[in-house]
Picture 1 (cartoon, one colour):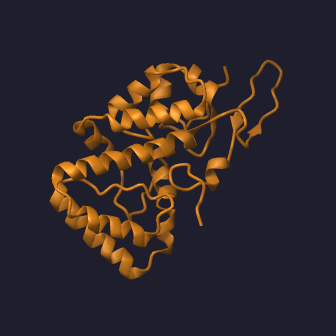
Picture 2 (cartoon, helix red, strand yellow):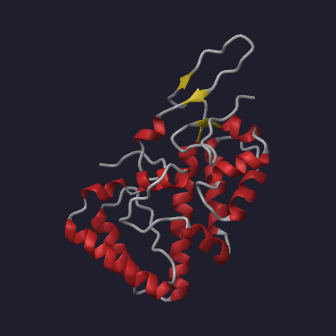
Picture 3 (cartoon, helix red, strand yellow):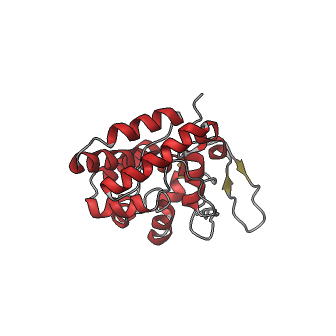
Length: 216
């Protein structure tokens, strides 16, 4: 079995692993990897328990299904691992790297939009008690601000439903960016005598939004 490339906190999201590697890894290492996609404890346990997956689409669909079915206390754990929209997470953890890619469109935000997001985040957290979460893939800063303002009018139950759905969408994108099939664009090191090859790729380095391809 070819070992997966790992950062100190698990597989780094900028390294593309093959699906068969994910299927074959010991449960603790596989769970460690997918925690960067969704920090809810139940998520990693249930996704890993479903192995082996026949293809990437099946894995991604299961990840989204598990995330949507999480109880609110588990969703809360996952939300706590996400930064505010408009913040730029520091550090080298898998979660921080994913969040930086996800919010790449914020580099184009003007000062007034940034200020409005700061105010909106504060109002949202005061109203609902948790961070505002939105799948930023394909959304401009203005669109995210408009969604923030819209969701501020939700009641608590409706907003929990919306936050869980956004978490599921983000989770699916992160899992898709983490695990690829054998056709992934990458570089395979030549096997050395008595050694093994390692699949390393940079495809996700050019992706934003948890592994989604950049959208213009």
